[in-house]
Image 1 (cartoon, rainbow, N blue to C red):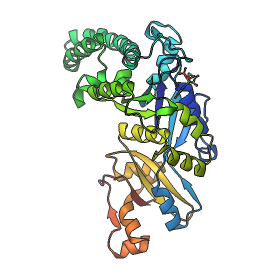
Image 2 (cartoon, rainbow, N blue to C red):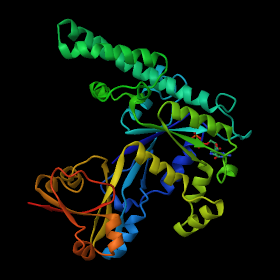
Image 3 (tube, protein in one colour):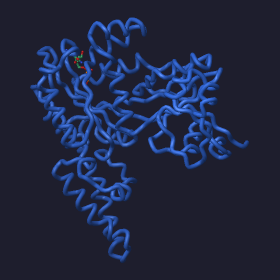
Image 4 (tube, rainbow, N blue to C red):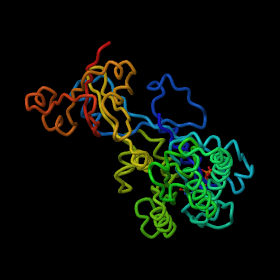
Length: 365
Ligand code: GDP
């Protein structure tokens, strides 16, 4: 299960957003094998195509893909030096696949800001500096080790040393590794360091509930947008307050509420979609009488490994995948009609799965 860590300074709306996530939470019954800790929220990944499949196949239930959000409280200025929850915080954040940083973009004289004023870029830089400092420590440790190995003439170590020096220089200027323009193979070399600032990141601009319908005049958001663009991070604009209200509503009620606000989807849905895009994730489907189900894979995954998401035996015994794209299937109206038109293909072990592939795997047991 993919995991997004929520970070941010105190009083920016993290808990409000996280509560909305847990309240909107996926049905626990769908995930009987996950023990869920208090700081973890599991949400369904919304995908309208599932309902269409369930209708077509007469499926008894729908199983959407899931995404985990972890509330990583305790990041304050000085965390890398052990302030606040310090190191405990950093070990949590090391385990997540992506980082969502909540930024306060609302004015409210009743809610104090830790630094006394609202300034989203300053806030981003406080957090990023802490993360850079933590990474700096990891890379410097690595450099000391690699230096020793390089002295004994090891080629790989010699090749890595200048890379580490370059990264150290960047981090020293508080430049996140993800914004340092490293090559694919360079990133591969430092992969095992699980650097915090190398993780895909997005900014969650938390705006006032009065502005959700139209935030075009919110200058804070504009600044965050500009900042995110320059460092290749994503941005999602939400109002945590509104999200926590939506989380209390039934599906019909929340649809009506969103329509009233003139919104197509909730902030949470936007956040999930943005996280999916950030992590390069796509869905493929399986559908039958039992269930219509979405499976999460990384874009570029081949058919046998995609099958492995269902069960390792299907990956091991993989023969072929019978695949029709969701769009073709929907246009034809049924699996049989799609077959008659020759739109159901048999794909082999080198087939790269596409988003929306409706799949039936054939395998040896
Ligand atoms: P955390 O410390 O980052 O977890 O922040 P909280 O979620 O506890 O929020 C701090 C305060 O800001 C609380 O009083 C929230 O009700 C308030 N808050 C959060 N989001 C919004 C928002 O969108 N608008 C307004 N006006 N207040 C908000």
